[in-house]
Image (cartoon, rainbow, N blue to C red; front, side, top):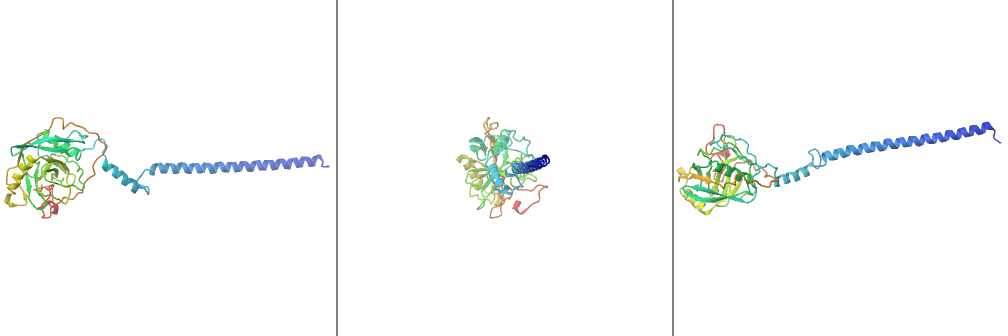
Length: 319
């Protein structure tokens, strides 16, 4: 029969075993807490990285795909103030840039043009080129085009236009501001087309240099670049343009000052056209920077006839 001493020692050993098992369980528990804490921390960090980069950020592997989608969305839509008219070049006539930066962007507006004493209608397409139409009606409402001459006529296999809108009559004048191209992809130029020309004011030739100059297409016109089409001229107006074109270009050239007078007395717009606003969600993508020429070497509608002192003539701006 075990003695009291033996029983005490056995109980002591049992207690020690229990304490050892309890301590081991506590160690296991602490390890689990540490591991779980580490996993949680990793998940938090990973989640933060996903939040920062998983939405098409520039440093992610998927950013190319996401950026492309964003670019497509941007091309299809515009910011809340889509039309901007930054200063550019020297104004040929004192005028204010449009104050309406969210103009009407649907429907059309008819303006009355008096060219060589004949009054006719030009229909401007707000949906296709709202910023161009907005600028045009703003300038017309301020009398910018009144008593100005169309300074350039072209007659060639690829380019048949009458270019107007420079009060200086030199082909390098504008309103003192520029604005971006609109809807220039795969543009066609049928007879009667009304489109923006590159103003050629100081350093602003090329894509995105729209200002006040515009051209009217009276014959086959297939430029190698694209220009913002913003309206069309009525049959009555085209009859006047055809009469001007029939008399040709001075010195029998393919491009230059028309032989016939081509004078715009007035362009009048409805009083509500300037202030009309639209429902904006998006804007147009910029066009190519190339300044096109026709196949015969004649400079296309955007070219300056006479380079200014600040312009260096290039192959694309001569002819």
